[in-house]
Image (tube, rainbow, N blue to C red; front, side, top):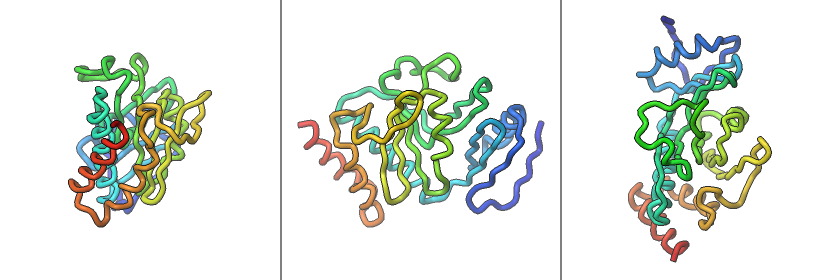
Length: 210
């Protein structure tokens, strides 16, 4: 058992020289705390989510679910599930993740083995507290085909091509939606009621699928 005592963290702390066993022990010890752990071949980042981060994380997840509802596409959301692979020396927790094409492979399972099953079809990363750029290589190693990133100002879509992420104007999961338009709804979030914004987003989607 590892007894980890941390100082008051403002945003994040980065540690190096951390073994896989220590990372796994801290995952267990800190499972009840509002901390996010990212492990990359001996380097460990511990992040404290901010209220702004949590808001955009929830909003983006709601947008994905709304798109799926309007397109009548089945999805299986797994939120911030930890994906850890010792053989790759990597472990991380997406801000939001969704199984779409592969949803039948994980639906109903209480535990996932990342070495056996497919990765999420879509990952959402909110770069309010920290940047997800350093996490991209880990997602590529896991084989995640698509990532959406938002930093409070800009929105990007990435598709995995030849083990590297390339910027894309279209979504692999939802190719019929002008996905870049999401940023305009995100920009309204500071002045528009949450449910009103979701309703406006749904109305816009109806124009996309009609």
